[in-house]
Length: 379
Image (cartoon, helix red, strand yellow):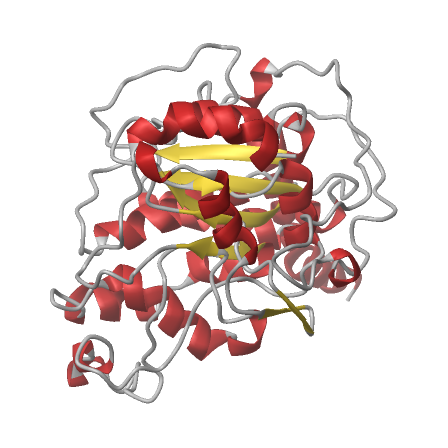
């Protein structure tokens, strides 16, 4: 009897425990980065009390963060190379979040993962360098570029060795979703990443890092747009062959550019039900990057998102692509109108005019004028 009880104990408790512990140790030792720990007594306080109520008010000024001005870029922040398949990577990312180690990992420092989806160069990198300067312990960077692109940043750059293993991405195809899930999975391997932002090579920050960090960390929701549109360009792209897994009533459209919490990111990389449906039945003129995440979140967890994006784009010209901004458009009044001049939106149950933290599409020739405006833009 004692032998049988011992066998049951080993099979039902000890073996699963040892497996979970082993996964956690491997993930932390291989993919986590050493960083200093700080306490943030105020970063999770409601931000709405400091948000401006009209376009003439200055940007919010949350309590200052305990920054180490002398901190230098740690070489161990470089990403570890790997040759995992997408399936292996997604499974490892899911295991990282579900392991017992993840639940007991250091929580003193919560980071924002900035994920850049780009065909190659980052022409606006100098502006982002200014944005990130002095905050190395509060962010992670991941770059998904074309696999043939081999440009390297200097070792003093925040972008140094932050490129993940990638595959070619083609506009309007499922490869866009593959790249987004690849970015999320790599970012989830760092257990300190708690918020995840998808950005393009033409995106710019609209506020300084401190304001952006507090806005995201204090939010109770993710920022992912998802809406029902009966038009041909939305519900008209639904294929009846998606039923019964996805019904037309569940079908949604939204912006590709999202910002999400860790718990929602985990659901996205773990999806094995809805992704195959999109792979088989969402073909042009159905564009997965406009429908997969909005539909997935609507089905799995609609209350997790504020149903809006924090990345501003100008669709006023019509057509399949938003307006592009060149050097002649880079004026502080133009940027301030984007930052404060739009309609009100809801943030943690309160209305505010600060609805966007990033903007696109800014051409490469805007890099120099944006840098000149950065002392006013990133205050």
